[in-house]
Length: 155
Image (cartoon, rainbow, N blue to C red; front, side, top):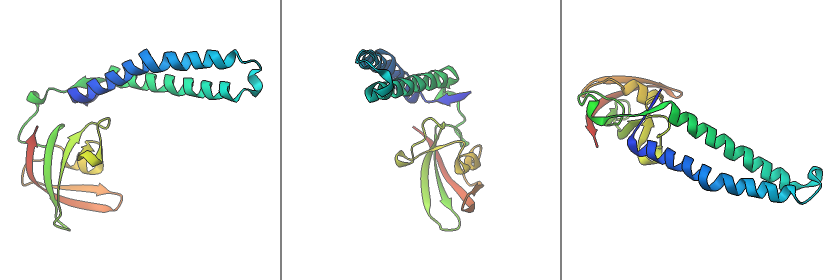
């Protein structure tokens, strides 16, 4: 079971509808058009159309499974005093004294450029459940990071 924000759930649903309603019919028409051109064994356009069809079907099935196994999280039901999904956490790396701020999100919403880290990442999982002032130890590929939680906020 994955938990998603309402915004991300709606984005995935919209992408799925776009693929089913617009992209797949075009891919299907392209395939029929290239099939009608004759010898399929030497038809590069046909092979490309088949690849596009497989790629589109694969993406549709993936998105359907994501939505089937996801639930929209109610931000009001989340604890406000602990790090949890959808919380914006500011913390200090105790080794470098660098301050960072990230929002903890599901893996399907992760976007480092937007300041969103997965709750399943080493840092995200280390921060989960901690309170302001707690020290979290994140085991990363580059070593163990000691992080002090400075603040927790919700949008």
